[in-house]
Amino acid sequence: MSVDAALAETWVERWERQQERYAVEREERFTVVADVVEQVVGDRARPLVADLGSGPGSLSARIAARLPDAEIIAVDIDPLLLALGRAGHPGISRWVETLIGRPGWLDALGLDRPLDAVVSSTALHYPPARTLLGIYRDLAGALRPGAVLVNADHLIPEEPPLAELALAIGRRRSQRRGVGTAEDWSQWWAAAGRIPEFADLLAARARQVPPSDGDGNGLSAAQHAELLLEAGFRQAGSVWQYGTSSVLVALR
Image (cartoon, rainbow, N blue to C red; front, top):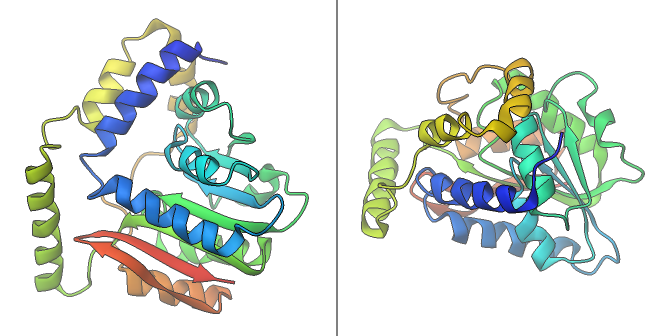
């Protein structure tokens, strides 16, 4: 199932605006992710990068713009978002429909060599801790020595007073930027549901996408880092933070 390129461009642009409601300093966060990836793999001739929970390719497209010789695999379970990305971002090498963490999910990527980098944005705060540990172990086995995992996500401090402050800082920043009035997640999906061209993809989505578990696993950056070290990464920690918006890096 495919989507017309012009229609995809319109809906990807709406997606970008909608997502700004939820990720404090989203563009800067993407820039930091691209900086880290370029720093680690920029000298490789054809770096292999996987974007987990890619949606319509927001982060994949930015990595491709920074590293035009990279082979980028965009991975998601959502048929509509993948179709929009495939039509709207033709520079991405491959689009893979699979549920991250499902047994055998890495096989769906069809890797012909170890990964040089894995990136993700607002996707790895959903799996429960034990599932996430399994995902990190899978990735530790799929990344070459010296490779990097970069996770840009909502990571709230464990201590309630600090968590409250981090959330407040994010709200204040969003208010100053005026992003709170943009279309939200529910409105975007409701509007997409009225597009006849999306009907088959939305029907497939209803069969494929598991129900969301509220706000996710609630793990802090430090707890993610502990899981990464347990999974076999040699170092892990945050390199950028604004409110609850964080970029966590792990080195293989």
